[in-house]
Image (cartoon, rainbow, N blue to C red):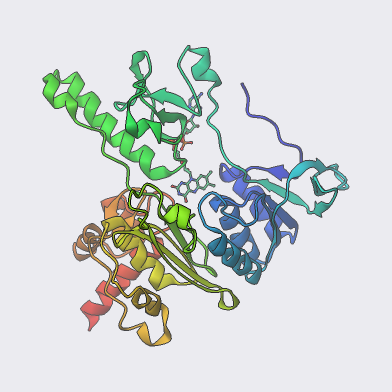
Length: 394
Ligand SMILES: Cc1cc2nc3c(=O)[nH]c(=O)nc-3n(C[C@H](O)[C@H](O)[C@H](O)COP(=O)(O)OP(=O)(O)OC[C@H]3O[C@@H](n4cnc5c(N)ncnc54)[C@H](O)[C@@H]3O)c2cc1C
């Protein structure tokens, strides 16, 4: 079936044509309404506001990024968005659109409380869902996506594989623990790429008539998800589960036979200055983190989270990384850290490419594939190149 046709003045953000519609609206001084407070909606709103557009983000729930961040972090995030010039309309349920523009196009988003948010362009950013009609028509089993097992084979059709946004890894074994807690497709570049790499290797082995043992090559476990907002005026990182609050004993003691807390939470909030940090740990190791307006702390926490390393007992050491006196003292970035999460490229690999002569982000991308996904690491790569050449000049 053809893609649904959206009315004039309403667009999704899926391809370059959609992006050019948004760019024209921003350049023309139009009012932009973004429906959806997920990562894409927030990044779109911040980028448009930065270019001078009047932007409103409309989301349901008390704060944006409701699925990922906790209440405190969400509140500071919303306030920071406002500081960046974005209007944020929370707890809003949209019920329809009004088309009273002179050309019959979009003029307002209607909400269930009877109010309306006026605008000239509505950007729909309220989630994606694989279009499973084709797969269903072929008789494949689907849920949120095409159901595949741990070898990415469609259920009951071992000669059909699915990867990426249209695939949902959930094996038919009801006892499989991993699949019991599995969510649908990730909606991210990285996991699909890793599935593609693994599947290419698997199919090559299969075609070469490799023995059964070699075909047991397991699909690697996915890296823990980290969300970093790509925006200039606002830094935010969130990962893992940060829903429990420090005084929420029931959540902290869940599963503990002796009634002693299993989770520890350190939290610091300075809403006036747009700063917030939460560290949720188990035996000193991060299970969740949220950091708004604290770039160095965020970078350090993400490294500790990815490595599964223990935090210093004095958690305030981490907060101080963003103090004015700490710029020079901030710990050197771990060379082994993942710089490009989409392609899974470490700092070591990028440094080696730079040493081998790559002098631009494009050259590093060509040599390592770092930066070829979402592009969020371009500044990091640029920084590493500059540092290398500064060192060389010195
Ligand atoms: C604006 C935007 C920003 C994003 N930002 C990020 C980000 O920062 N970080 C991140 O990790 N992810 C991001 N994503 C998500 C990411 O792009 C997707 O998760 C990823 O592209 C999924 O890869 P895929 O190969 O499964 O599907 P796609 O990249 O969607 O590729 C599917 C391909 O199949 C083709 N196709 C579809 N139907 C048919 C058919 N019937 N016959 C033949 N071909 C067909 C399509 O034309 C397309 O080429 C973003 C997405 C968008 C839209």
